[in-house]
Length: 130
Image 1 (cartoon, rainbow, N blue to C red):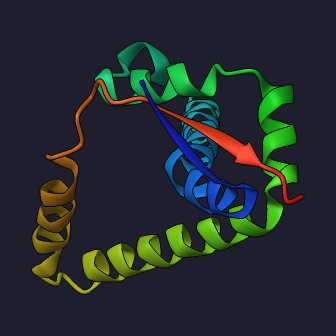
Image 2: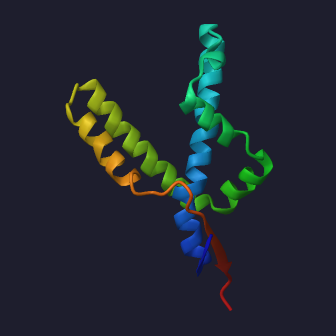
Image 3: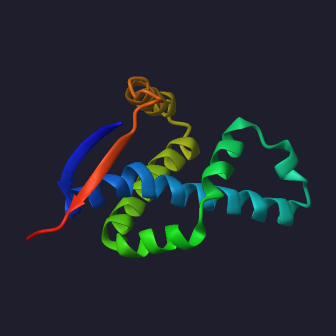
């Protein structure tokens, strides 16, 4: 692990995107799968592949702890959610309009994720102002 010292504000901004938003997305994806399963009467969860399984592992995190994190970082979470929704809208529009740049958008993301080492862990120490 590598220790990184940062202010509370910087910590909350960074982790709203790198940690908190992924958990929120995982909870919502699993809920969407459950809602789909109920509405369609398909045993969807037994057919879930690696992607949904990975998200369900994240969604199995302690709900009280994550509720508290979401509310304690509410302003940054709202900004992260807005950014995510905007990107979803762009992707949805591209699908609706059969715009070829969907592959380009995915390719840009793949180029960014490739250099992220799977075993990197950072410990952030939140410094309180004196």
